[in-house]
Image (cartoon, rainbow, N blue to C red; front, side, top):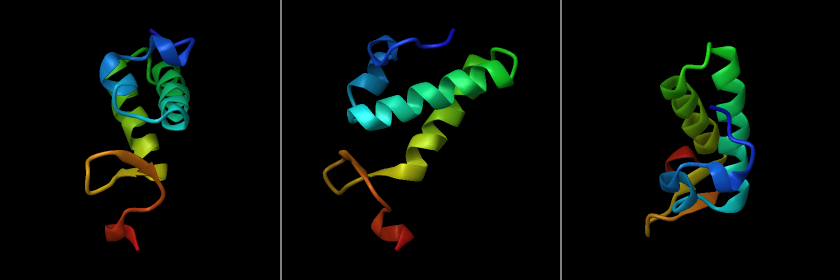
Length: 72
């Protein structure tokens, strides 16, 4: 099912991502869900991939915007 608001996202997403990353996740999930015939698992994989293009985990395990040191 598509997510209408960030507050509707799974707890595992809301508890870990900053607001902007949550919005990226929501938009990517909703697009993939529609594009791939309502395949929820694929929607979540696409959404995490979209977040990881813009965010990475820092040394403390927090999601932060920008490339990781490995990408530099």
